Image 1 (cartoon, rainbow, N blue to C red):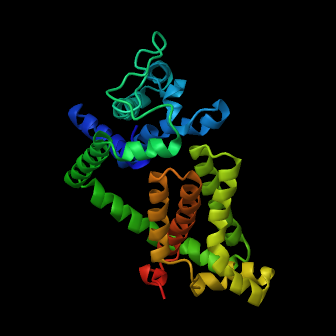
Image 2 (image 1 turned 90 degrees about the horizontal axis):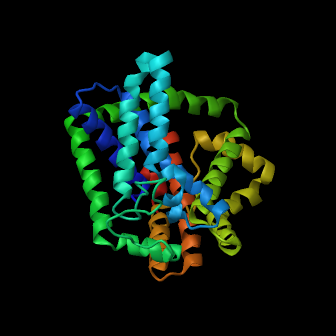
Image 3 (image 1 turned 180 degrees about the horizontal axis):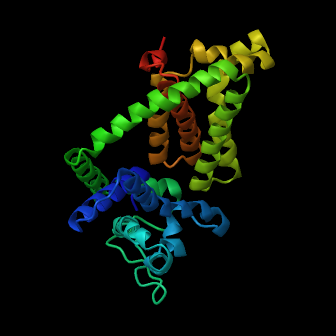
Length: 322
């Protein structure tokens, strides 16, 4: 069971190498969609709260069986061959990405390769399927095979990306999109928005919050701890609220602040790194509540940092400690 970056690199590597060996051309757009398909299988982790199991036990679901996806691809092949023959060739990269996802999940955690005849999860070794989340993460990160698997897949993918010039092309596309799409969008915000961007900003924070809580399967107490962690870091906004009033504060957030970046005392690089360091330390000591508290501080600051760097192009200097 690789992490999200591991499956990203694994999907890219399998699709790019698979198409090369099969001598099939693949566009960058199709490559992107195939990579996303190889990662989206893990979205079944969102179902675990409804089945009262732990997040890393989602390999038990039907969505994590080669049988289901084999049926899906056979059905799509028959439909496309009958009605849309030109789409048949698109199934190959998607099938490769999904199959390699299961291959990467096999060493740790296992996959039910012979479902529906045998529901046993077959793998090379198991970090553990019935242990607390903090203990599982600690064991996963300290197991040499899992760490080696993550790094080897990432390194191999980066080598292939460099050889195929995919990396250079992707970065060029990112820069082009920022210049042609993102910058005009920010200009539009500056001219027309009063409260709208504050609402969008808050909704993104809530989305990250609820998604992470669901993935971690937090109980009610740790849910409240997580909520405290994600809002307490914004206490450095209080001075502006007291000075301007809540209504004017949100208007400033949506207009003036976009044109003239405002610096907040707790939003800085040292606290960003300290929060993730403390969360990992408490994870090792199996203190789930403190791990949760500092993890959600980190996630809140990480989004704010990426927002400042990518959307508002403030630069890292804006996040230096005073």
